[in-house]
Length: 32
Image (cartoon, rainbow, N blue to C red; front, side, top):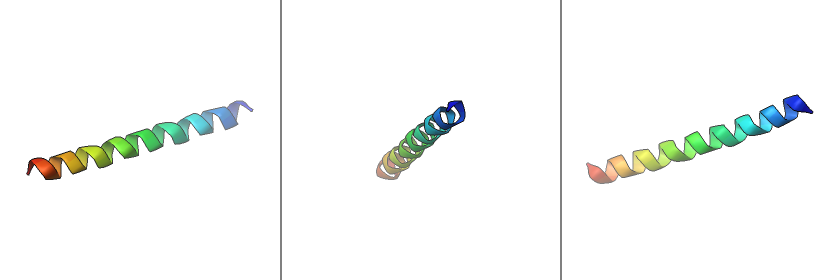
């Protein structure tokens, strides 16, 4: 149960980082 919870948190964290990277890249392309 503990490993499942940790895995779920890892997926959420990975999704958040991915979304931030996409937004950052989009803003950078707009700036240029």
